[in-house]
Image (tube, rainbow, N blue to C red; front, side, top):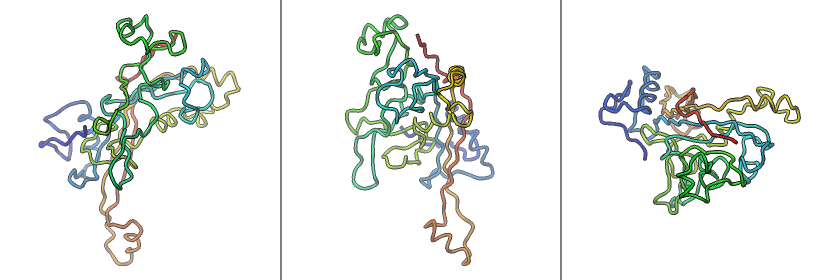
Length: 278
């Protein structure tokens, strides 16, 4: 669902005809570029916006709290408290399920091993049967993966697509729908769940990677959940190097145009998760 720019799109600021949350963020980003301009028609320029819910999951409780897929897909391999992506917004544009190498036709294949809202890799939304009795009555298989009332995952989980036609092909809000995710047939964010989780954990930076130290484990348990907004900008820049002495630069990059990409993350309390752990 790449969001195409509105006919009243203003390259210097806001889309005054559609003042939604994502357009407001885009407005700020566009204004920050002044006097530079984005050109939607070049097939490169784009702004990608993702809301991300981060929760502190105490994996020392047991393997089931982060699933059994394997430590390679955990932020931290050890069974210790760690920050995990437990949700990604927009909910209807948060996964890439179509692979493509640029040759032939795309194929059905998930870029990542789990839904952003399914942090324990169960394949279903897990809920406490007491906290959500209505949901439990119609979804008995989605309760108590470890035989206990462990947690309530936040709403947003959807099942994998059965075919390419119904596959999700966008990750994040895309202002122009130009940026294609590397190695896929999808547009949107280059940030995977694994990369997002690795950044927010900052274990070595904060000296919280000595998991044999009880004080470190205690400190990790105190890290709060949080909501963040991730903004990525892709912009095609025309190099001002059209002089003979600098011709090797053109040869090296293959064009007089280069794509510049930047990203930034900001607090977004609206998507801060409130998962109930028993």
